[in-house]
Length: 169
Image 1 (cartoon, rainbow, N blue to C red):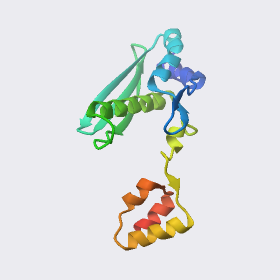
Image 2: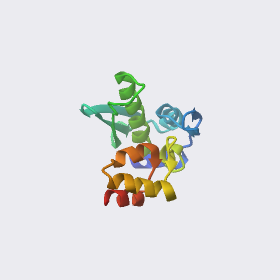
Image 3: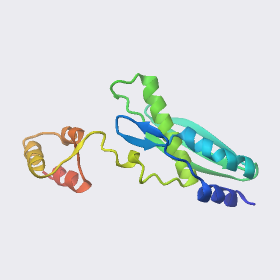
């Protein structure tokens, strides 16, 4: 069996429940550890190894590569994540740790074709409200008077069309 066939078997048969709960965002998610735990039976059965490597690209960007190998061939997938150096409520090691965990999860997701489109990580508004009607009109007035779009985005969830419209004012 080639490494492509082994990886394909994992990709098509992989199952990992979203068993962790984010109480702030009110959604369930899976972590890199959950993904790795779910792949262990495949790793043993298919006689492959999965390795994760991280590289600090610059002072605030982490590149993570997940690699599967059978000793003869390898296949890798990468994720690149920025570290929010201004994240309030976190010490610097926590900021890097959070970014590292996120990058590992997405590198593994890329390798094993884990589709997280239904994952709240992809759709979470982080407490922001959708903007519409009166608020959108007020936002337009605010931008016209010299206000910054970042201030609006910190309070409201904008669609790409709304953001583009505000940027043209």
